[in-house]
Length: 68
View 1 (cartoon, rainbow, N blue to C red):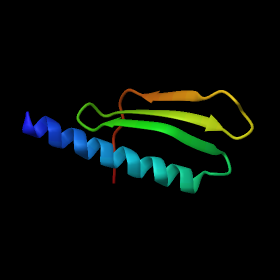
View 2 (cartoon, rainbow, N blue to C red; view 1 turned 90 degrees about the vertical axis):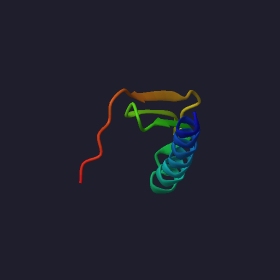
View 3 (cartoon, rainbow, N blue to C red; view 1 turned 180 degrees about the vertical axis):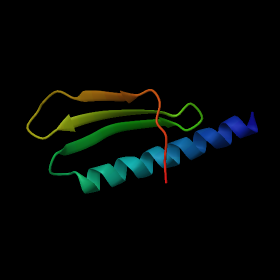
């Protein structure tokens, strides 16, 4: 239970950092409204609003892998 809570805190911190990074890097394209990350399952969900659009778009990555 403690590990799950710590994993949740880690996922939230990473998601917040990723949201800020993407918004800073790609502000001319649009903005990330929401970001959720599950490092154990390798899943990422981004809710985006592209520049000039009124509706948001949701991007789901069901499996990601970080490669050096």
